[in-house]
Length: 620
Image (tube, rainbow, N blue to C red; front, side, top):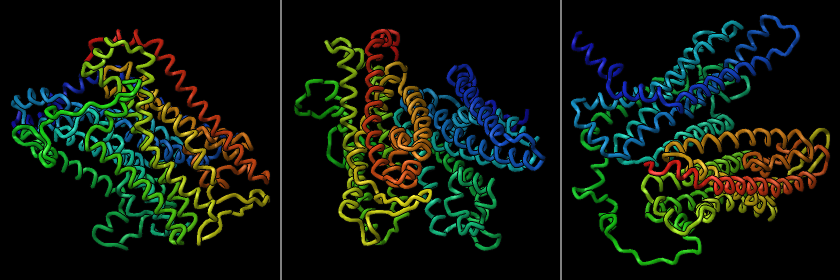
C-alpha cells in the first residue's frame, strides 16, 4: 500500500481512536435508542404531514406535488433541529474525556501524531451523527414520488445539517483538547449552542421586521446578515426562495455578497472553514498540554489565584459558618456560590438582566421603542431568561447526586443519621434557594413593566389598548399589570419540578453526563407537549383556554404581554375582566399542579432510594 494512502487512512477510516469509539458506541444501547427514536420521529412526522396535506377525497398531480414539497420542507426543518439537539449529546463525551487527565497521559505516550489524535476523536464521535443523516436519506427520497421536491434541494439540506454537525463537533474537540474544562462544561456547551441559535433567529426576525431584509413581495422581509450564521435560517432561505428571498445577484460586493446573495453556500463553506480552524488549533496544542498550560504556573496555581494573591486550592483556612437545620440544604445553597467565578457570574446575570429589562421600559416610555417593538423585545428577553434559568436548574440538579457518587461523597453521607426524605428535601430546598436570585431577574423585569402600566403608560401611548375581536370592541391593558404577582406562582413551582426531575435522574444515573442528557430529554419533552397544548388552548378555547395556557411559562408570558392575541376566544365574548380572571385562576392551578408533581416525584424517590443507591453502590 502506498505510504500516502496509508497515512490518509490513519487520519480517518483506520484511525485507532475512531475505530475504538465507533466499535464501543455501536454496542451501547443508549446510542441504539437514540438512533431508533430519531428515525421514528422523522417517519411519524413525515407520515402525519402527508396525511394532513392529502385529506381531500380527490387529488390531482399539482396537489400531490404541493403536499410532497410542504412535507419535505417541514421534515427538513425537523431534521436540522434534531441534528442540532443530538450533536452535542454525541460530542459531549469528547468534553467529558478531559475530566480524566490520566487518559490523556496514556494517549500522548502512543506514537500517534497530534492530527491523528484530534481527527480520531472527531471522526469517531461525528460518525454517529453522520450515520443518522445517511439513515434518513431514503425517507427523504420518498417525497420525490409526489413531485415538487428537486433532488438538489434534498442534498443541499443535508449539506446544511452536515455543516452544523461538523462545526459542533470541532468546537467540542477544541474544548476537550484545551484541558480548560471538565464534565460540567458539557452543559455550558449545550446552553451556548441553543442560545446562539435562538439569538440569531431573534435578531433575524427583528431585522426583517425593521425592513432590513432582502426585498420580497411581502416587503423587505428576506435574507439578512443573520441568515448565513444559522443553519435554520440558511435552510429557510434554501426551501423558501419566494417568501425569504436572497438579495439580487450583483447588488453587493465582497463579504456582503456572500452573506446576502449566497447565504446557504456561505453557511456550509464558512462552517467548514471554521471547523478546520478549530481542528488545526487543537492539533497544535494537543501535545503541549492544551491551553491549560497558559493559565497555571509550574506549581499548577491558576493565574486568577496568583492575581488575587490566594494560596493554592485546598491550602487556605476558612472560618466556620452557621449551618441550617437541614445541612444538605445549606450545603447545596452555599456550595453553588463558593467560588469567585460563580459569585461573579450570578451578579453579572442579575445586573445585566435587570438593567436590560429596566432599559426596555425606559426606552418605551421615552418613545424610542414602538409598542410592537417593546412587546417583542420584552417577550424575547423574558423567554431567554426563563430558558437560561431552567437550564441552570437542570444542570445543577442533574449533577447534584451523581457527582457525589463519582467523588465518593455519597458513601460518606449514607453513614450519617440523615434519612432519605431529609436528604432529598434538603437538595430540593437548597437548589431552589440557589435559583431564587436568578429568578429575581424575570420577576424584576415583569414588575418594572407592570408598574409602568399601572402608572399610566408612556409618552408613546396609553396603558390601555383598544381592539376589535370578531366585531366585538374590547379594551385590555397593554401589558397585564397583575403579571408581576402571578408569574412567581407558576415559575417557582415549575423550576422546583425541573429540579426534582434532575434529582431523580441524578439518583439513578451512573455519571453526570447521562443524568444531564436524561433530564434535558424529559423536561424538554414535557415542556414541549404542555407548551404546545397550552399555547393553542389559550387562543382557541373560551374561558377554559387561559386557565390551560397558564400551565406553560411560554404561553403564560405571551398572554401577559400580548393579551389580545393570546386570548382571542375569551376576549371575543367582550369581557376582558373574565379573561384576566381565568388567567389568574390558571396560574394558581398551574402552580398547584407543578408542586403536586414535585411531591409525587419526591415520594417515589424516597420509596426507592435505598434500592437505587445499593444498585449503583461503588460506581465511579
